[in-house]
Length: 604
Image 1 (tube, rainbow, N blue to C red):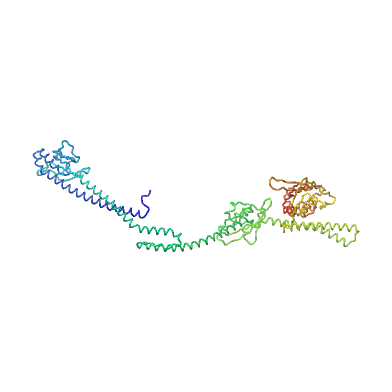
Image 2: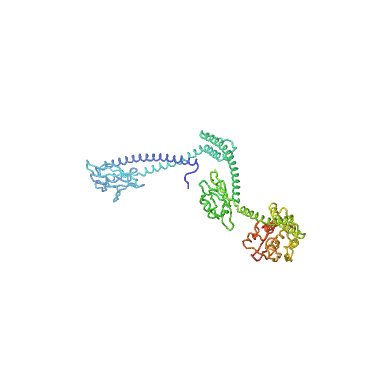
């Protein structure tokens, strides 16, 4: 609980009241002390005079031992105002006579009454003293004959009247103080009303400076200090308005820049986070400060293994995962003019191209770029293999054609022999055309996708029957055995592309059944609990089959399960079938077991 008021006017009033109360208290105390001192001096003079008079008149009575006359004289003196008790004592402090007057009663002699605890003086000299309770003034006067002490006169004088006068002075002082405080407080508040109103108006003006930009200047009426306060507040208001306008412009500019910077940060963050290439930065202390998810994924590292590492520590972690660490020149060489290549071990080795740049930024010293070139290396390998394979596959029929044509030019043959040579030239030319067509089909798919496809609804069994009619089995081989479905199988495909898929699949089935094993065609249906039904054409052979390693790579371009050269082909047939099915919304499923044959299912 706060005893000190919060408002200035109440603080000022309370302080003024305290000061006034202190001043009047000091004045009243001084007056009471002065009046009490004067009254005490008067009472002491009266008491001493009374004791001296009684002593003078009682000396002979004491000498003659006239106790009755002494008592009568004491009773006479006890009738005086403010006398409470008169006692005459011998030199041994024994009472000769004692008269006491109680309030409202006549003086009376007291017998066998216990005397006060104040003993008789040791020296024969008149003096006064106050009783322990402060209610009486005791005056002592000696009775002497020459130098001989005969007795003591003790007069107890009542001080109650003086005490009442002192209390009355304090009472009057308190009343005057209260009246003066109330009057002065009212006058002070009346005097402060206008200045406080000016201060309150100045306070409201200061509070509203931030809101009332167009407010008129404040006008205060009062002493010079208030005029100066008015001038200072008005000048402050103008300056604050100017500063506020500048601050608002600055804040709008800052907010616009912050929004632009945030948008750029979001764009950069999205680019870094979604970039397929790895990105890593080093701070000026040479420690890794940032690594995007692509880098962690490509390097097969966790974020806590990368952040805070220097180039040597990161180089060591990359070498631990390298297929052949001796082929990697190190991260330091990556910041040179040529990029470094690092091959990481795994089920399928990953080839990373690493290059770095030095920067002049204040927070970034080095930037490391990591690009996954596994596919590019694989394509280069596959292209090399294809060029070798294509050269081999094309050279064989070309050599045959060249040799047969040269024979026909330089030698004469019978009609039967000439026709046989021409048929051989035709077969070899047809093989070359098939190889070139497969290459052109893949190039066309890569360039245009399904843009050239013409999708139409067909019955799947009818498409298969038409493909079988157009398919010519190898010489001496039986046509495929077909098991027709008992229900309709409607599909939406490009007729020509579907015919190509079926014929390529049948060709592979016969090609990889060199022992003359039968080829069969069946139909399947897949009805998942949710989603659309899929219909499948199942082409099964009982030929050489595939190993699990070869089965996993089926569909890769230029991959051939047979590398002996006994079975012709470029390794493009299955990949062409897979890509055509993908463009028509289907999928390719291959099940095979080495030495037991292969089952190819074309799902649509």
